[in-house]
Image: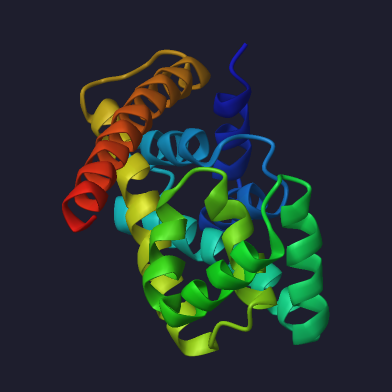
Length: 207
């Protein structure tokens, strides 16, 4: 079975609107991982269904709009209620209220950088817009930073799929997405250990 292949075949019938809707649904109801969908869109973009730049633009637009909806919904929540919610939620994971308030202050101080980097981290990128809305991140910095992050994330996996298509990939798209997931997990694990080791050495030097 190739559910991703079937999904992309369905979207091809609607052209760029289908690409937009598939990318949009990935942010709203993430049935498939984003990288899997984007790889599949990249493969399909090598066909005559749509051009590669147009396919990438539609995918970025769908992901961006989907994430922005959560941001806009979260901004409606009053600031005090949002802070209480975040503190209660963090307490479930053993994080103290003082630590949460410190993280909230840090996020608001570095809102542009964190809005950007959060779009490059799996899973976190899905909830980051809602958290930004709860923390009342300014619309301008959020819109620009998240748009750049979404473009980079989508572009990387779109390019992986497109390159596979250029080299005459004709296999199971779902299987290819699984292989990409494994590579991504290994890369993230290595990056995490490198970052933690660097952070510990930095703290040791400063201490």
